[in-house]
Image (tube, rainbow, N blue to C red; front, top):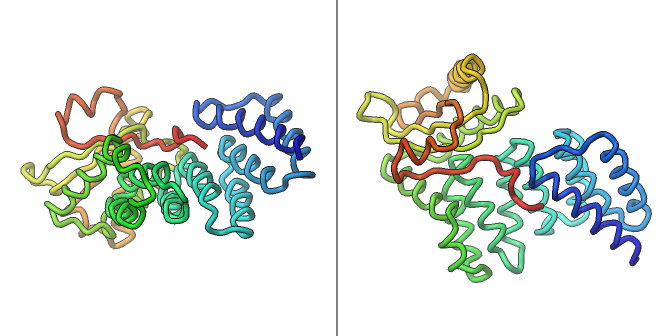
Length: 276
């Protein structure tokens, strides 16, 4: 078992480096990692599946990453660590809505829920469901470092988004339909929303609230994404939502949020930075 622990820790440490940094291993490194994972399969099959799932997510192989994590959870569906890791991989694959479900499971079943609650807060903004966080916090505050949570920027932003939605009477289930449409478009184009911010836009004759999603892409790509998003919302019979809240892809600039909204909520959208 000592050998398995050594292999597992070494491989996980290296995989986490790539997962957190956003860099991709070269083909020789991938081949070596696969050999190490193959050794691990013989003595620690669950650990090997975890390593496979993370590696597949780094390679952007959603089907195989999901297969690995679903197999792990078939043995222990409420395991908080595995659910949180699964959430990180899904977020890296731009599947924030699916990731959120597993972060909530992790928070509800963890003995110490602070880390998972922060994940819930970050992703709740991405999927336009801020009460996912407030409800999870209410259930799990007794198991968390509340002072640390209140100092976290994502937690603070999530509370602010909840207040904005309440102020404008925005239904989260409706808002989530827009988030799902935007998520699908990003997955199809293999593009991540780098950051985002809300602005009150009702005074301009537009939706009461508009979310601007920063995308690293040329103007033609961003224009096409907005056209696809509009078509998707209409096709899903969700056009009525646009009177309340809209979602627009814009060119990503690191300083835009601070310059344009002067204190309104901002959020980092790429959950790939979450530690696995």
